[in-house]
Amino acid sequence: MTQHNRRGFLQATAAGLLAQSAVAESRVTELSISPFRFDVTPPMGHSLCGGWIKPVEAVDDALEAIGFVLHGVGQPIVICAVDWTGLLNEAHVSWRAALAEAAGTTPDRVAVQCVHQHNAPFACLDAERIVLKQGDLPHIVELDFFRTCLERGRKAVANGLKKTRRVTHIGSGKAMVDKVASNRRVSRSPDGKVLAMRGSASRDAKLIALPEGVIDPYLRTIAFYDKDTKLAACHYYATHPMSYYGDGRVTSDFTGLARKQRQREEPGCTHIYFTGCAGNISAGKYNDGSKEVRPSLTQRIHAGMIAAEKAIVRDTIGDAKWLTSEMLPPPLAGITAEQMERTIANKTNSVANRNRTSYQLAWMRRHAAKQPPIVLSALHINDVSMLHLPAESFVEYQLRAQELQPKRFVATAAYGDGGPWYIPTKEEYPNGGYEVSVAFCDPEIDATMTAGMKTILNAG
Image 1 (cartoon, helix red, strand yellow):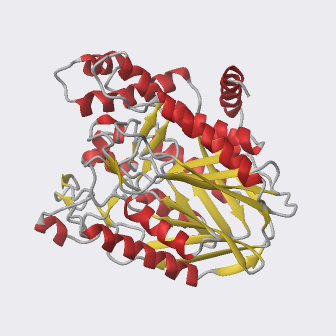
Image 2 (cartoon, one colour):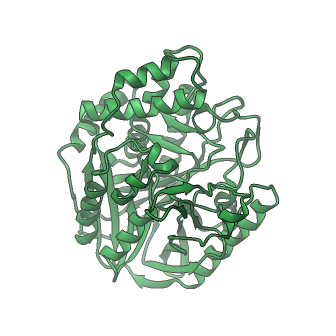
């Protein structure tokens, strides 16, 4: 497909998404799966985390995009996890369109979720165009590299289709992870206002001593089998996946390193890791940011994976559904596009402030254009659900999803379309704190996203 035709394909599919909501398919033929993986490691000098930390100086371990194409539930379904900080707006739609094209399906049947490591790219094509006009700002993402990754994705999916295996069983299991996740927003005034943040790492003894707070302590694993042969294992856990970063050394960090350890141990099974709703969750209570802690966190996640896999209960494939719902929540009131443009153009402002504002302006322009919407999706097989949510959603959304379907095994992957940046709950907006300060949407996003979750979970 030529570049011109690909652009037309992207525009047509994005427009088509506007008319779709809660699309379900329960007709199941024989299920089969086509795993794929490809390298997405940025080149030397490439921006990391949006350009406001040190760019690539070295690669400690490669970044990957790993996923699978599932056949037998209507048109093919594609699910993919990417070792990047985020994919936002047009960049996210472009990934879904490219993988859909390669798999012979439509973008509404593709879920692309980022793991959210920070020594990694934070891709927004809209923001890249905004900063390029300034002439003095670092790239958000280099376009040639971005296009190369899309082409690698197309080839990887095409190659994966040549190695398709039937799926006869699905399994699910969970296990508690010891001393990793902790809530960042635990230091509060009596009226609930956030006073201090633990962050991804903390050396403040008072903050470390505070309780873990609201977390989801379980690592969940969903696995696909051909009889007794495990073909793919999807692992889900909610925490910011950073031990330390900002040193220019690319890494998949402790969650990625744990995944890679499982891959070495089971080379015949494709292991995939998804970060859950971790907008307000990190390892800050158990991580002081030292290099010595990364291996410890890696082994705790790895132990959780092993324990969850040991707890797996398998079941013969029965019914299956793919459901979607759409939303395009409004941006925060009180700031205009003109004000954002002035912030970006003001060379006395920090790079972080200018580049970050470019993401916010991109979201405002997207909402003004009324397209494309964010797509929430869920794959239901038997009593197992794989839920895909956008951006840096608070852990409460993940817990809410489980409450909506208490009799199902619900595993949630967040960090899909990152356009809204952080997604706090409505109750947390008045309480301030870092996450609220960089949330791009009005508090009504809570009701909007919860309604979408109900639509695609309750129909499962």
